[in-house]
Image (cartoon, rainbow, N blue to C red):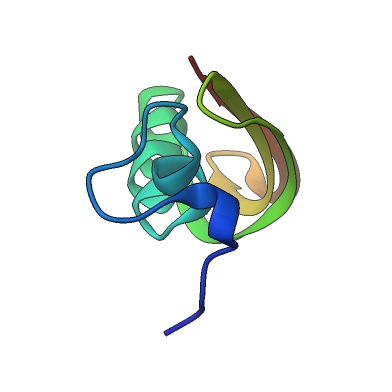
Length: 81
């Protein structure tokens, strides 16, 4: 298991959304967003995080998506406050 940076806090301490947006659960959010747009999530990884500890987190992800017109690389972003 990958260790999280200390600023992410422990269990139950996700007021800024950092744990959700930097963990495997982010994949479920990406899958839902891609599916809603008519695609299928093939693969993804965390690309960048901007954090304001205790306040907000924004994360970007590189993703490979299968669209009706073919597969392509996409960049997605999510924020929590």
